[in-house]
Length: 298
Image (tube, rainbow, N blue to C red; front, side):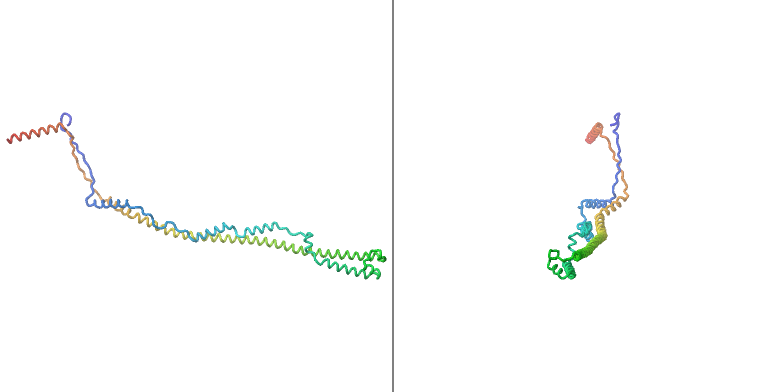
């Protein structure tokens, strides 16, 4: 009730509602059903291969490189050993032992022959009695008696000359033979060092060739793997597009439905506050009117 016993105040409330047209509602219902079904679908992993297989060319390239690493540079160690041997090489010296190796084993026999010839010449130059004495071994003894010092001196000088000349010639010949072999040893050592260097160079070039072959095989293998991977990537992308296709269609369908124009409708609700006193009076008047109606009928 208002102030001063007036009538209760009545309030109005306008409610605006947007309702789908009846012809659109079935499409929205189907959209919701399909969206719900799509949201409940289990995850489906890609069934195909994701990564390309390692190329056989790359495997062979790795084997070549691994072999080089395991074996090192073939021949280098042998070449280094040969070089070290060359550094330690010392040419032979013409020592007494080396001299004896090159002295002729027939020297003494040759000297003996020459000495015997000198003796015979000496005896031939002596008187008969003196020669017989010398042949009998009485040379220089008390029985010689007649040998002269001059003849003796010439004979001894000739013997000494035979000995000295023969041994000198034998020594020189031995020295020449030794120097010949010594030079051959030095030349052989030089040739060996040169061969070792050439062998090391050949080994290095062979290794470089193997490395280049491995590099080319790796390049070929990578190119092949790139092509294979591109094909696998296309297959994966196609699978993802297939999986996303239903959602894309639902999105298009939803966009179309959201574009349909919808007119809002407005309704007015009237609300009267509850008045217990006024309601009691109203009820009383109603009862009174009913009573009068009943009396009049009687």
